[in-house]
Amino acid sequence: MKKDKLKKLLIFGLNSINYDSGLVNWLNIDGSRNLTKGSETWITARMLHIYCLAKMANIEITNLDKVIETIENSLANKLFDKVNDGWFSKIDNCRASDRKESYQHAFVLLAYATYATTYNSLIAKEKLDHALKIFLNKFYDKEYGLFSDSFSNDWQNKDTYRGLNANMHAVEALLAVFDITNDYKILKIVERIIDFVIDLLKDNNFLLVEHFSENWQPLKDYNIENKADQFKPYGATIGHSFEWSRLFIQFVYTAKGLISSEKRTNILEKALKLFDKAEKVGWDKGYVYTVDFLGTPIIKERMHWVLCEALNASKAFYLITKEHKYFEIYKKDEK
Image 1 (cartoon, rainbow, N blue to C red):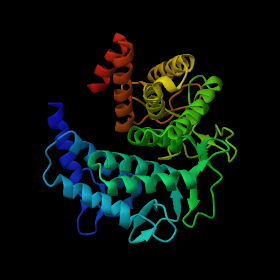
Image 2 (cartoon, helix red, strand yellow):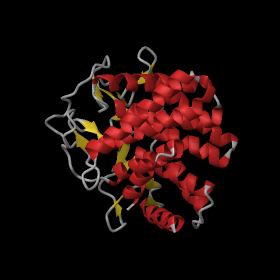
Image 3 (cartoon, rainbow, N blue to C red):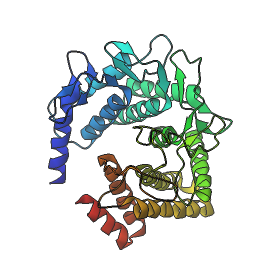
C-alpha cells in the first residue's frame, strides 16, 4: 500500500518537468506547473535525487531514465554557470539569480551522489567529483570547520551571514558522498560540523540557534521582524531538530570504529535529547514550524516537511533503541 502511494506521489511530481524548456518548475496545488516562480536549483537537485532513488527501488515509472536525464541536464547545463563555475540559485525568465548559495550546492552534491550510486558510470562519478570540488573549494571554511552561506556569482563577494541550515544539508550530502567514496577526509569534515552543533546544545537547552555572524557568533534575534521567513525564520526550527537528531545517528553508524565509544555514546545521547525536546515543544495537534528559545511556539503553521522529518527520526530512534515510545510517535505522526 505504501509503495502504491509513493508511486502516485512520484507520478504527480513528474508534472513539474517542463520538457519544452528543459527546466523543473514549482507546482500549483492542482498539479499544474507554476511558471511564475522560475526554476530553482534546490528543487531540481532534489528531483534528481528522488527519481534516482525511485530507480534504485525498482519503482515502475514510464520512461524513468528519460526523466532522470532531463532533470540532470537541467542541473548540468541550464542552472550551471559555465563562466564562473558553480550553480546559480535559480533561473527566472531566462535570467540567473545574482548569488551562489551553499544550501543549493549541498542539494546538488546530494543529487550527484545518488546519481553516481544509481548509474555507477565513469561520467556519473566525474559529475560527482566536480560537484564535490566546487562545494569544498568555494564554501568550506577550514578555519571554522563549517560552510559559508553565499557568494556573488563571480565568487568575489562573500556574505557575512552564516547559517546552520546549509551546514545541516552539507552533512546530509557529505554522508552520501562517503558512502560512495569511502574518503575519510569527508567524515572528518562531517565530524567537525557535528561537534559544533553539539556544543550549541549546551547553551540553549537543546533548541538550536540557526543564525550566526561572520565569525560564527549566535544571532538569536535574527529576523525577529520577519519571523516567518521561508529559509531563515526567527527562533528554533522544529523540523531541523528532528533532522539533526537523525543525522547524528547516521554519522555514528557511518563512522563506526572511526570514533571512540565515548564519543559515540555522547552523540547518541545528544541525538535522543534533541529529538525529545523537539517532540515536547513542537507537537500541538501537529508540529509547529518554529519556537522561541523558551520553547514557546511562534509560527504555528503545520508544514509537511516537518512531519516528514519527525517520521524519519522517530523510525530511526525506534530501530536503534527498541523503545516503544518512539514507535508510538511514529504511528501518531503517520496518521
